[in-house]
Amino acid sequence: MTLNSDMVLGLQQNLTLTQQLVMTPQLQQAIKLLQLSRLELAGMIQQEMEENPALEEAVEDTPEENRQVEKEDPAPATEEAVKEVTIDEKVRDDIDWESYINEYNSTGRVHTERDHQEAPNYEAFTSQKTTLEAHLQWQLLMNSPSETEEQIGSLIIGNLNIDGYLRASIEEIAESGKFEPDVVETVLATMQTFDPPGVCARDLKEALLIQVKRLGIDNPILERIISEHIKNLENKNYKKIASSLNISIENVIACVNVIKYLEPKPGRKFSSEEPHYILPDIYVYKDEDDYKVVMNDDGLPKLKINRYYKESISNGTEIPKDAKAYLHEKMQAASWLIKSIHQRQKTIYAVMESIIKFQRDFFDHGVAHLKPMILKDVAEDIEMHESTISRVTTNKYAYTPQGMFELKYFFNSSIKRTNGDAMASESVKEKIKDLVAKEDPKRPLSDKKLAALLKEDNITIARRTVAKYREMLYILPSSKRKQF
Image 1: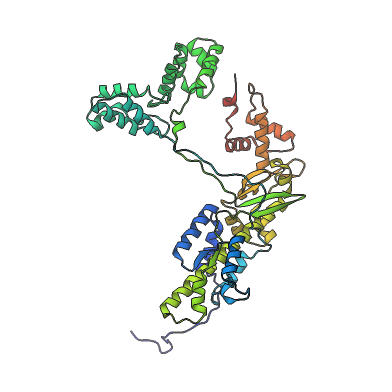
Image 2: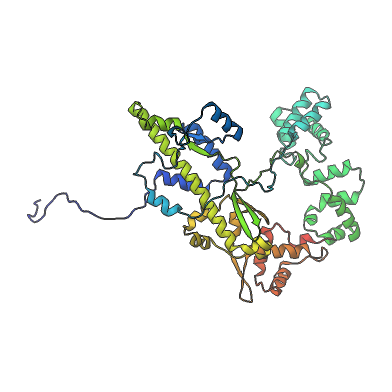
């Protein structure tokens, strides 16, 4: 094989100009901070304070402490030693500030002072709750069981779910401990007499029958309805029950009224699920004819850079090169964190102000006056990207004169009205909720009827949309809302 003399093999260099978005670690941190909830932010700040020695909490002295310091060590106000460290100190010039500023630039000042107006009290003092397992174990031991009975009882307790139902068969319990099934059955029958009534039942029928027995009600019809017609009870098909048992509808309704007071989940009151309290990120107060936005800074420490490390670098002290580089790195990280937190608060503040501007009628008059709004509306108003608005409004809550709302709540789709106006989907849900609340319990409104009533109010939506909104509001269909 021969090479043509015109063919030249070699390396060539070409210069090509391209644009590329570079996500610096600092910018990534700022984005991460935006989407954190308030509790997550507090945890992250605490972790950073533990890991970064250049970061510390700024503790405000009381007036008495300030006067004591002045007496013991008077110093001029201009002395460099007491100069407060600013955010921008010790930040290198090679940081990608342009990307940061373009993404998170916002205007306006943020109120972070503690507001002295009356605020909701979120403190809750609760005693330690007794678990269902401990409650049953105590009752088991009070019966002076034999060693075998105690072992079987412990196995039964260990196989209960959070509602107090036994989720293992007699055979499985007997097999696991090499016990006789008859002995397991006897122990189970004893434990089904324990408190709460209905505990250790194997299904809903058994739980309800145990409760009826505990109440001392001797009614064969009631027991047959529970044993044979659970599905018809769920669907409120009382006519079928009456026909099947050859009794009047009045007798069925009388039995149903008794069943309503029984507990379908015997272990409910011993639930170990703890309530989750929501702390608002923002307070919105009515101030004469305007609204005031105040950031909630309770529980969030005010950060500053450690003065000792700053002075160690700035006063020319001879320190090892590695130590100096380490201090520079930690001080830069501290500065970025402080700036990012401040920018986060400014962005949330700006978003809330914009929401108030668009939803003024809601803050004045309530949910029925909520207007359709999308992320793009606020993004264009405060000149930020929609993705930023989405991060800001996730897991952030505002305490307003109308109640507590997640910021995402104010962004909802538009429903066209026959008169040409638009209405927020949340307002339509509120109207459906009001219509159901005012309906005749004996003749509940069907989804078709609800759609017709909404049309009379110039709101045209399909029946399936009404059904979807009703399910989102956890409202049962008309057939299950009917009262006899």
